[in-house]
Length: 68
Figure 1 (cartoon, rainbow, N blue to C red):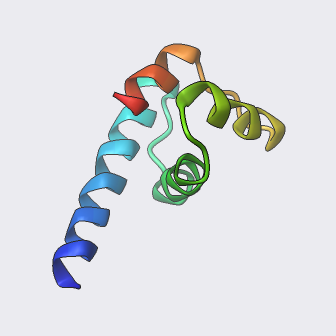
Figure 2 (cartoon, rainbow, N blue to C red):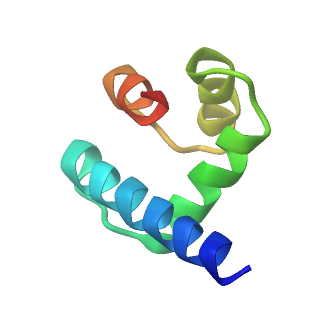
Figure 3 (cartoon, rainbow, N blue to C red):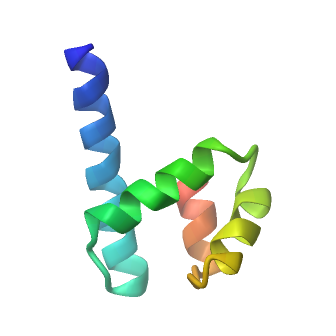
């Protein structure tokens, strides 16, 4: 269980770093939101639609980087 928590924290940090690099925002809450949406969708193209509906704008290059 501790290992899962550590892996999740590492993922949050990585997503936060990517957000900062691509859109200039380093926000862990936004990172958690992005991770949650990604877990609910099969690929970058499908997951980008709910992000856009949520009022967030993510560059398509970021979506591809995130999924890789």
